[in-house]
Image (cartoon, rainbow, N blue to C red; front, side, top):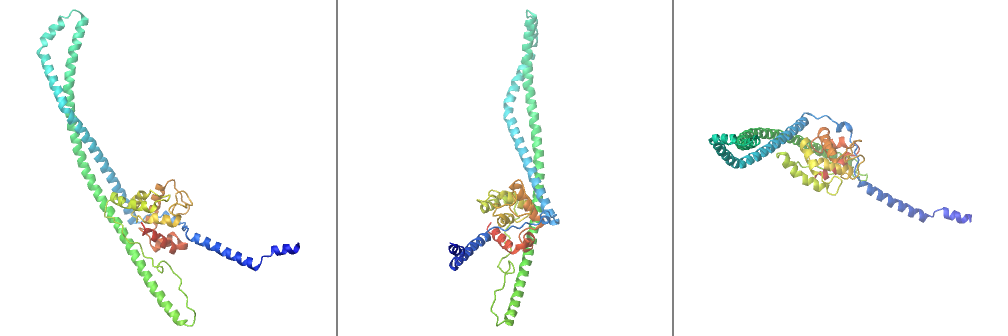
Length: 376
């Protein structure tokens, strides 16, 4: 019995090999599945809460000015529509009231011409009650006709006042339109300046990467010459430059107004986010991008890198791996994230921003996010 137990307790060589093979397969599957999971950047709060620089302040202020001007213009246009409606109503009612007033004038004239006969009629009534009834009847006729004439005068005065008010509102609308156009021009200039600044920074990064690659190649050639007898080794990757990554193409058009900008980017972002928890938030992303002057692709792309577009959030509505921040809605979260990107990381993705956002694994973060941006 003891021998049998010992045989059962001691695995054979074949069993150990089979177990080792099984364990290796399991480990491979785990590593493969883990590699596909989104990164967790845990972005530093100081960058999230960074104070805006002069250019960013200008961008945000011009957005506020433009939004206010457009809202005021829409309000004035609504008032103009209401004023037009009242003018049309008064104009349509005037002919009928003029006819009533004409009849009333005739009736009053007849009453005046028949003044003596009316007095005789009142004096010849039999009783006081009949006198009062007759007097009330005559007074009612008089009052009704006077009211018709007064109503015409009132309507004419209201029409004149309404037309005057309409003209004043038209002038105000012209002023608001000019203000909105000026604000839009300032907003466009500020955003184009930010885009130009980002493009210059990207070009500098690319040039530095190319120079670094040349230096690395020269050093590798020297190392190969010094170690001709040693086995050849593959150089290790040093970052996104070695993997062929380039800065994102600058295809954001800031020369349009806000509505055109939002109309262009909303469906593109919605298509990218389809089927995810962030689905349907394309307009929110587009409006925030306009308000803060940020590449509209950047925040949606980061949501993929960090949480598979909101599917794996470690805090409420936090799809971007930002410290311990949470929000009560996607709208609030998106606005806060885009604002934080603008103030703490810049107009669009760059090697520098990747190093700030995800220091431990910035190369993979940069490449993944950049690839997603190019898909939008």
